[in-house]
Each structure stands twice: as C-alpha cells, then as structure tokens.
Length: 301
Image (cartoon, rainbow, N blue to C red; front, side):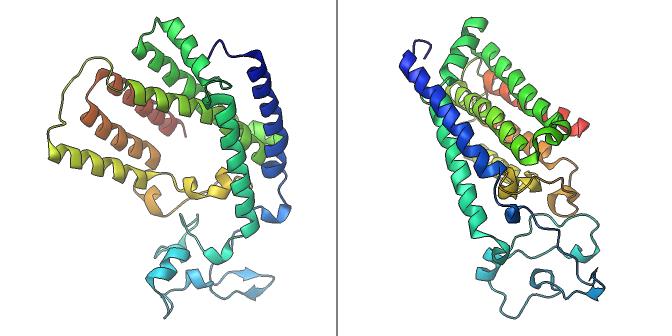
C-alpha cells in the first residue's frame, strides 16, 4: 500500500536488515565440508596410483536387492555413464546426503521466504502492491501495458544478473552472488505470477475451448510434460540455495541429449497449453514474453 504507516515501513526495513545479517552467514559462510566434494572418479579411474572399485550406483548391473524402494533413494545411472566426458544428469544417492546440509537448506529457504513475505508480499509492510500501483499509474491502468512492463523488467533483472555472474563471483563469491540473484529475481517472479493469475482473462477472447474435454486433457498433459524439460541443474537444490557452492555443469545425459536448451522447449510447451486453454490476448501476450525471454537466452547461452 502506498499509504502504509511509517512505523510499519520502519519495521519492514528492520526486517530487511535482520534478513541480510541472518541469511548471509547461513548460505555464504556454511561449513567448508558442506561444499561440493570433488566429482567421484568413474569405474576404472586411478587415484594415487590405485585402481578404484566401482561405486554401488555405478555398477554395470543392478544389485540383487534392487527394488522400487531402493530406486526411491538411489538413482540408476544412464547406460553410457562410464563413457561420458561430462556429467550424468540428475543422479542421486540418499547415502551421499549430509543431514547438516539439508538443515542449513531448510533454515536458508525459510529465512528467504519469510523475508520475501514481510518485505514484498504482505500488504501492510511489503512493496509488491506499491510496485504494481506505480506501473498502473504509468500505464494508465492498462493491464496489457502493465504486463508488458513486468515482462521487460523481470528478464532484464533475471538475465542481466546471470550475465554478470562470472565477474560478480570473483568479487563476492559464487554463493553470495547466488543469494543476491535470488533476492532480486524472486520478488519480481512472484509479482508477475500473481498479476497474471488475476488478469489472465483480460483483453479480447480469441477462442473458448473450455467445453472440450479432449482439449482440457491435451493442455493438462502438455503442461505436465513440460516440467520434464527443466534443466538438470534445477534439481541440485543445495546448489540452488547456495548451501553448496554453485558449479558450472556439463551435462551429457538425460534431456540435454534431446535439446540443447531443454527449458526453452519446456517453456514453449507450457505456454502453448495455457494459451490454448485460456484463449485471451492478455494470456497470449504473457506467453509471448516468456517464450521470447527463453528464445533469447537459448540463442545466447
């Protein structure tokens, strides 16, 4: 609210200070042993002149006690894992996880989300509504123009910070920069999502396919399938939250073998499904902005 009480704003700024003082030690100065350990050697590689035994998860054939329960706690490597030059995507082993790292992850994510709520989402202390009101005044309350502004600001901040990552990490470190990146991107992402949900039926109705059960199923399945095209690094949650030091990965298996930029393909699928179902000019504009952002990042990555 633009007319928020000064005392509530001061409380909001105080919370910001507490957040910065609290989350930085959690994620930027976590114990060194929680940082990603050196990549395990593949079967047959040598360390200190000795031939290593194959790890359990890299065995050529599944162990005798292999079961569905075991598959839930330890992933099966790709068939070409031993011959890969890069990394095998989305591998996971419960035995390799550190409970201390996940405690820090829970504390860091809780702190960030609490700060996001107080400083951005909550009506009496946050600034999300101020941001939208400012854009509406600038655009004459035209939801399409407001949406266009958000669709330009978010990619500039999100991709802009990503583009200067190599230089910024040399100054503040990879983990601290990940925190800065998240604190700038999350509020804008939240605002854009909320604005889209509230205005998705604005503008001209291009078509109405709500009466077709087949279209509904097709849109739902396409949207669901799009999440299988998330980039493999998305699942490295400890790196995403900067509990482990973010790394540059060269994935060579999984969805990356289907498309060079899987997230771009997934975004096109997700957007096509939503435009087909909603069928308004506002929705079409939003999806065009999202696809344009991913196409640009895909051609420049």
